[in-house]
Image 1: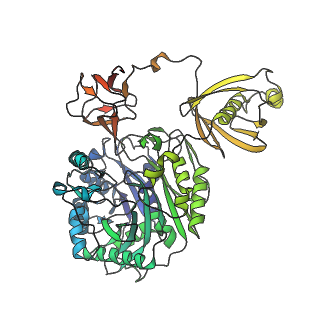
Image 2: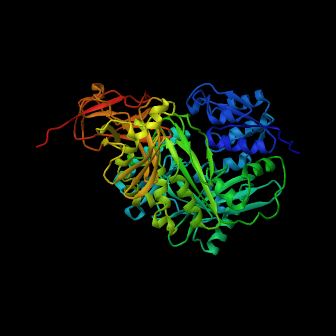
Length: 637
């Protein structure tokens, strides 16, 4: 009989570690965190009863070192290990090593993980179990009739090693690039091809199984809104599925679990075509990022159930009945308008209002670094109906104050309020069609700049009493001028405390300015970061980050024309074949590949011309703004 767990180590970081610790505390368990050097002061470390350092920064040296994690668990007196998701969560060897060390493994049997670890081998198992599958395509014999194709890494997930091919001439290079990315991400370069389903839906089934033969199918989730094959918005139940399709998905998921003698929590993922045909994609032998929407709908704590199943408890024969609808949005530190470029730096403020669940690994003042996924938080709304849940989530995100980093918040709000999403017209091509419209420049920042200038000129709370009582009547009679930039646009504000065209100043304090704009009262919340380099203005008109313009420009800001600067800190993982000073390049040609925060980014030639300098080499760590190369544009004829 499995002994009861008393102390739990989470072999992970960030929001999932914090979330697991929350349940562990509720169950009366002691908690142990592990951390890399960059994570020494991270929220998951602060949330645990004890923490053990994993020396180093890169995941390969820290969170992926199973031997160090087990050593940490034994040293801290833990008797169980929960892997969370990502890192070692689907590593069968690690699961065995945990068990061989006398620790309880909070996950499925190593044999089940192994069976599902390779997508190609998993599909063979599922075919034998009668689960519907897409037929694979041999890239060597592919014809135009097979297009478009989807290339996928056989190991791992998260969108790494995936590529859509629409032209046979591009297939060879796409295979090479997908294999290289798969090796970098998972240490396994195996890639396979299958038909790419246009406008398909990504629907999955949460399963939970015990050691006594009970397998629950806990409804469906729709995860169709994706960027770079990574999920952005998820919901439960998947809307608009006929009962017959829903039942067949549940049956297929249970069959998949039984085929590998599954135990614990897992997810079976399907692609559903526009005409309602489901095909098995993969089985994730772990907890999913989007598990909170299932928890909300079924009123369950899946982590608590994982722990009880690991202790040998039996599940009831049937799960509880679902109620209502839940929607989850993943808030990322990234710029969707700039090829989803991840952001790093200090998160000064993270404040999300409303009756929503927030799973996060950050608080205000924490730093978002270069080594890990840039997800800041998962925000979840649950309501009796889908429309109410979507509305509540959009409202909470729209009212959030997120300062210090560019995020995908506006994209999330726009997606949730988009007519297609509201009508549940969901498919994986949503952002292919709508990204440009959803990332249009924010509403004019002129009024926000005015609010920032008024707040700057307002007397401080500790100013002399006479100054505070004098208020806005005790100021210069001539208009004052302030200049700010926002999203590449400069705003020069000439302001007078009591006289603005179409705007009336009702009150102005250092952190709150109230204006009457075209007859409508508006409140603007104003905050400066600690070194006064940015001003954040939040209102119902939108959120704006303003940069005060110095009186004189800094000559160091000038760079040589054609300079290619690193858009983020990261690692140069590839340089184009044969690229060297003197090479001729064409506009838009990929020159370098930079990896940051688990994503690859191409550095493209800004114009056709000659490469006059190349400072980047494969394996090099570069800082934000580092000079990578210089392209001298060829003269126009």
